[in-house]
Image: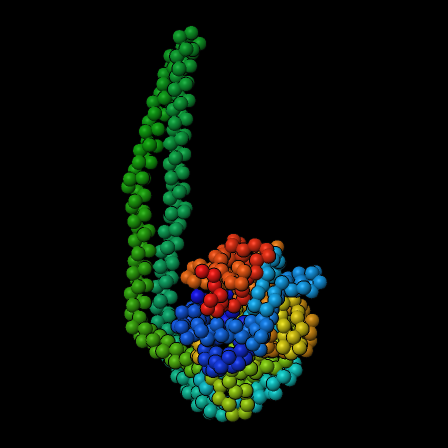
Length: 545
């Protein structure tokens, strides 16, 4: 048999401290209690063995008794306190018993964490390799944009820059010499190449002249002659027909008719000649002229290729030499520029106004290191400083993976900041991390997710990053439900049950549990108002047969 609910699940602040104190009072070693608190729900499974179960029952029993071995004083939720106040302060829980009643309560997810600025600027070390801090500004100091935050050692870097400068100048001189040799070779071949190019250009112009001028003009002339011949023939045919009619009617003489017939024969001959001219030009004259023009272009191109090939080997060798010298210079110049940039990086300046926070002071406490100081070694990309905007703060709560499905963006949360003497401030869940964080080297199986809760802007100007806080995220409001304290619910496998008073004894009553908070469980079936349930494991002889 095991206890149902969230007794024993790590909670922020009070619950954790109370369990630790309870474990100590119950004779449980602190190391043993820490291991139990740090374990995941799976590892903290109640299958830890008989001895663990007995010790857990002792621990819970001591908690229920208020830590002093007497009357149990179960905590109530906000909804329960309101209900009790409405009844004139009379509580439904007395000693080891609880009277079942209808109540409203909040379902919350509790977690602890720390404050972070909503907006911040992270400044990382940009110097390659490892270097040491020569100077550093005091943590907590307010700085302006452009103020020097730290200076890193630069002696070795300056020596390397000097050596690299000499090698860069030598590479530059070799490049200039190679370029001059290439120019001389180009000048010697340039005149021959230009002459060949001129011949090629003239040949191309002649070809273009024939293609765009001579040939189109000739084709238009031939087409015009053909069209004139066709129209002349048509008119001659019409004239002959008309002359025949006039001759039959004795309006013209036979000679005039024969003149028109001769003109028709001439028109037919002209049409045939025009058609033949087009065919001769298309089949013979035009291909000949095309070939002559293109041949001149091809010859000029071949001459240019021969001239170019003659100088190619010399130019190729010169160009290869120039290319290698240029590449060598570029490599040297880039290396020198990188070194000069690295030298600038040794002086770390503030990119904006802000409050100086060392990078070693942020993150989970086991991730933090010794504060920055003169002589401290730092590595490339290491976080050096954070400049937070403290006007807008967020509480970063770390929620156990088993509770994360209940948390949604936009849910309300109550945050208690240790530095404000436990005063509550309301916020809203703004972001839920998609990646889990490990529980540290001593408890690597714990998986927690960072939940960022937005706090009201400017509600407290004295808040600083990394201040400890705890919070409750309101995930649901249970209204008017039959509910009992979590201590009253027990589990055996998948079954849930309570011990209900029956005369001087108790009987096991199977129940169907619904929603639950840290203190109350909704009972959907099995109990009714007025039932008295036991808040502890019954002793031998107390359970009715």
